[in-house]
Image: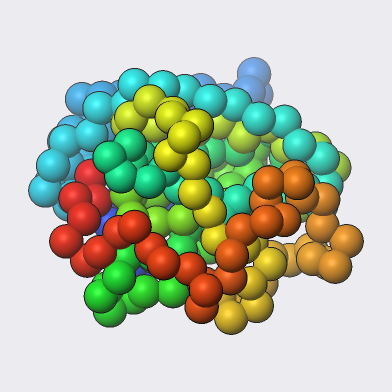
Amino acid sequence: MEVVKTPIEGVLIIEPKVFGDKRGYFFESFSQREFDEKVAPILGHSIHFVQDNESMSTYGVMRGLHFQRPPFTQSKLVRCVKGAVLDVAVDIRKGSPTYGQHVAVELTEENHRQFFVPRGFAHGFAVLSETAVFQYKCDAFYHPEADGGISILDGSLGIDWRIPTAHANLSEKDTKHLMLKDFDSPFDINVTLY
């Protein structure tokens, strides 16, 4: 696999090595050994995932921008196994030189890319295809009482979601998140990202 650094430290794109022929393709979607060998040196720490999640959504669905509040913070390794999504990580660490900035990457069933989102970041995605199946690994268990979010429709973030957001399909919960300017982040620059 190849690890691609992004403009925000700790946010990484993972490109697996895909073996294809006339029968189809094969690749390792995750190897703890290879993750430790190639990603841990960049992060300065090993990651051990404890929970896998999957969602299915239709075109125009936007999920996010979510995070888990301390002490239940999570890093995530996400991928789209059917269809296409625009996946986004937003830095919400107070005092960070990249606070409020984001990294966006298109994840598709064809490109097999994965996206590593560290702790201290809000995460969300928009479905660009007719349907999308989205999978993610988390390095801490989900705690509903620690749910947090900022508005996925916050124009100040400068995210081009590549779908008409005026007609986006959002959960009721996601319509209630605050804009970044009104948000008091539970994270600071000293948060342990991994």
